[in-house]
Amino acid sequence: MSYTVSRVQWEQAAPLLKNVREQVFVCEWRIPKNIEFDRKDHFACHVLACNDKTQEPIGTGRILSSGEISRIAVVKYCRKDQVDKVILQALFKIAREMNLKEIFIYSPLEATEYFKKLNFNNSGSVFMEAGMPKQKMSCLLSEVSTAKYYLSH
Image (cartoon, rainbow, N blue to C red; front, side, top):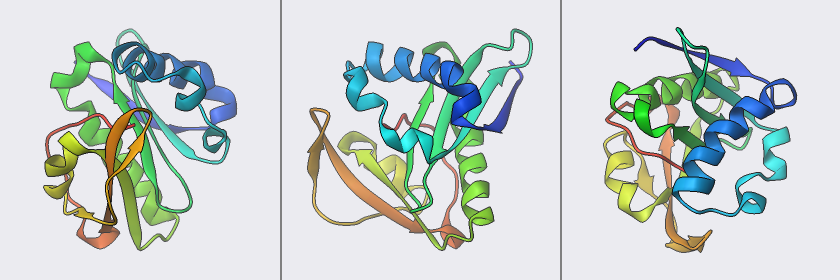
């Protein structure tokens, strides 16, 4: 499958971004909508992956000016296509354009090994968010790499 990842504005692309995030986080992960969609969406830089043939939205992610990467989601039937890698690369590119030195993510505990392969390191203690244990992980942008995929809320 071929797909394109584009930088989008929340105001114009919210219905498409919400579509992907509802499928992944609300339906699959059972995260309440009022937690999934927060006011940070209006301030974040978003990327959207769409299937080139159907133009359907298949993945998304966002980054904040603080360096926080979050809401990385890929619809179930596209996860084998490594869409997540391209989404992460797009977010890393935006981070470089923002002149960020460090980026971070609040990783589900079961995904920390995935992010360690990207050169992220544990930072702080484990905490609960949306009913799941999370670990803050950070990385110097100059040291970031890519690995196989994981969904991140």
